[in-house]
Image (cartoon, rainbow, N blue to C red; front, side):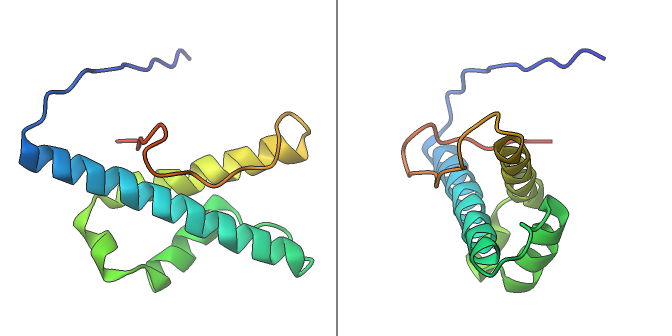
Length: 110
C-alpha cells in the first residue's frame, strides 16, 4: 500500500484564517493535554494510555470552546502522541515534547 501526502498552499480569507488558527490551536492544546495525562500516569507507575483511551477521556473533559473545530483533527493528535510513545519505548526517538504555539502549527484532516 502506498501512502501519499500532499502539501497544498492555501490563500484563506481572514475568516478562514481564524478558523484554521483555532483548529491548529485546539489540536495543539489536545496534544499537550494528552501528554500531561501520559506523564501523570507514568509518575503514578501506570502504563501510558492508548490513543483511544485518551479520546474517551477527552470526550468527557473537553472544554466547551473545543467544539468549534472538527473532532477528527483533535482525535488525530491523540493517535500521533500514541505513535510517539511507541517509538520512544522502542528506543527509536526521544520522549515526546510539548508543542509550542507558532512552531510548525498543523493539524490532520481526514
